Length: 208
Image 1 (cartoon, rainbow, N blue to C red):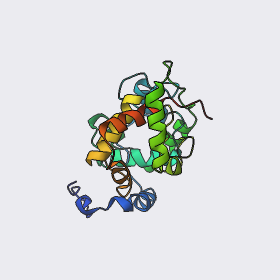
Image 2: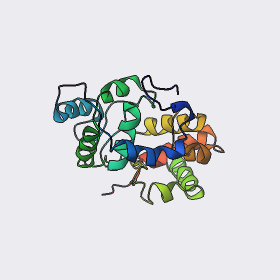
Image 3: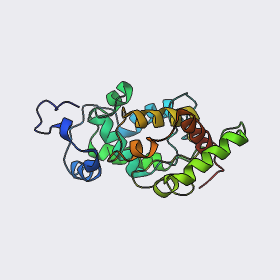
């Protein structure tokens, strides 16, 4: 990352492990809004892609229902600061105030978690994915039911192709993680392992 113009912060040297305390500090600072739309109006635009009921129906677009509030704030913060590589989301988050981030998170946490996909899981792939989660601390960070907590996202019943793309990005280092934890955990896995993990996580039993 290059340094922001007009800022004394050098994002290139910003350690990923400092993201959480840095985010908390940043949320105490005022940020001016460049948009006249209300939070509710902008939130409806988000739901057009991510699903009005919290369940995405667009390939590679994540479902938002059931995501932890702090995770939502952290991701919107990264988009707002241009630290995640997604042109549409960076543009959508541009000008959001810190109060806006909290308001968006509050609304997202009210959305119900997505249900399992209608198609049943492949037994062999599901079993292989489950075994991989037992060998790695997936259920420690993301909760045993993969419902997510704090800055760790909900994985249960997320879109399968989105989960796979995200894990590939973490493994390759093209997506920012918390202190490199995800890249480290995925480093020894094959692409087939990631495919099986995504399949297992996408086909979880319904949870609250």
